[in-house]
Image 1 (tube, rainbow, N blue to C red):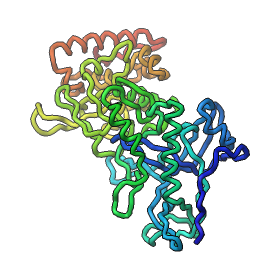
Image 2: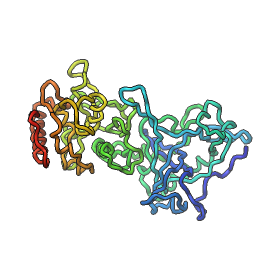
Image 3: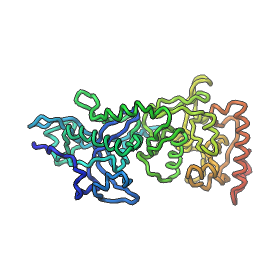
Length: 436
């Protein structure tokens, strides 16, 4: 088998064109500050408009502001049977996220799509090889029926790491511009036969460690923007995703119960509990925040996506124990899955049992907060007349922090704001059976 000795495309070739579906190499930044090389297959090219092809010199130009979307290919180590040179062979699989379906034993898998700046990619021309000659049978289950796949030599890939890093340094591009992957990943970074990580960029990893970038400003794993308030920033992404507002993100917000720190689901480490105002979770993207301020919200930080306790759920143990919580913006999903007998504004048809007032207050946002978060107002958010909400002591929900006397004053203010919202709704009347 003859393996191409120069599989890396030459950007100096002015006639070279990069088309959708072409493979490319780039550096990926992980939550643990490791930076590794990855092979991706492009799914779209964007420079303000969608394109199917682009000249390579334009593609990698720092001033072009091109973004390439792509899926990450999983590679396994192998060797050329003739020269015994080290190879990396695609096993036919893509990197996927795993999301369990609540209340079932079923999990969904979705290919993770990354968005990479054009100047940070290196087009490649991998060798088309016979998979059965390079991969053992247990790693060929997703190889196509023709038994062909892609292979790249190890040495040129190591050289690409240096090339991209030099481009970052020469252009003075912030390290935060490297595509970021968070959470637990199976199959990436690529590993050698002995299980040790391979194709790592030692220089960038060291620079991240030296700069200590994760201790002050945090990089959002979804949009790659730097923020000093990840909890509020991520809450905005989550709410916009729930309400159908499209954003250009590196990774989409997970559809089912996204974590308030990473925006993803399916990672057991992201289970959240609440003990008074202490948020307990092992999410790798967790950052400290002041619960009382975040729960209240403000003009400058309108997001109120904090873990809350649903008292419709049974909670065992002592009253002072940490209890499983639900992120506030996930409450409507929680009601759908765990308390479907109740009505709430997110249901297509507002039918069901009376919803406790404090749960309603935990779900509703004012028009001003919606506007600041870029979220359209739903009719039933502002006109709650179809619902028969109860304020019974036996069936209320609140955060554990609201059990204090000072928080009681807040509830009174929230109730007044809630009444004003109802009164200002055109054409809506307060139901006679509702108590305020």
